[in-house]
Length: 243
Length: 243
Image (cartoon, each protein chain N blue to C red):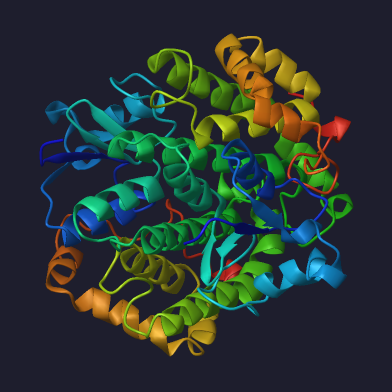
């Protein structure tokens, strides 16, 4: 593979695409953010939809995000992060530690599914308004039990590894992923997150260190950053932020 | 790492543990199946629960399945399969193809979450009987739309790679994972699966080739195989098998 990438992901929602973006940004890897381009430039929703519908060239993908480089195609957020991490020094070099970074990214992915399902317990193909009642039944368990369990887990992992980064010796894609997940929790569940994160100062400090890294800090204030909103995985619906 | 493994997973349900077992069995790798051992031998539910509760040594894990070898600990099904695959020649050697095998295993993992949530749409911490109504609302979409979409996706991947295996040149953990997922769909949704799989003969033929591999054939008839039942991911509830 040569050196310039394409990221294919839905425009206007951070979703899983933002996890890939953070890795590309920290790696200072040049990339074309296809979903954010105008349709006239071959971008936008139509270009992403072609991947969703299987109307693209190369190895078939099930769903975005997709990383592309010429004829090489890879999907699945954690697989992309692991692949880019190994190539751009954002995965540990030791085989087991690399797999542990992948496992952490996958645990973050599990958290995303649970966070999404608080507002879409019945189906991702129905509106929130059509499953609000079930959402009110599902969300409290996530806020009171699952957010603390996830945050305390990452706190233990961090402590086990010495407190600076989750695994290995340097920053990895897992640390970047945790930063994005924590940002999402703080956005969507401000009350539940404030309560749970009071017990996990190491996680909060790690996220601040990620935020202050020069490339990440520049990215976060750029137009390339996609803010959270009520069409993504993390949505601020105050009625669901009660444990 | 030396050569003998421990698999830590809940006894009596195939769940995600069976995906790891299939890789260990095809690799002919010696392993101790901790959850299946008697509690007096340091096994059973109590031994697995220690991992769930974080009361174990080594790198913290969020949930079983866990692969252990002496002080080395790894969790997350797809990360374990990818790690074992690389070590036992059940992952493609090329970097990109290895990542594609991982991405396929992750797509299988997404299918598992959706299959599970047909009977547990509200919460994994409530009984099926307490969310049966919501399950009846959620399952038809899975049966009529998602099962066909997944099967047709794997059919396209297989065809793109020449028809023998999903990715790379030889059998990988992704092929083993697809076999187990297809077995689960056929068990839980016999009507929906029969209808959808009529359009994916390549997937069915691949699964038969997996079933007939000598080590897999021996495993499937052994006591080490955990059959599907109504406590796992794939449950046969006839009322949910309608598209």
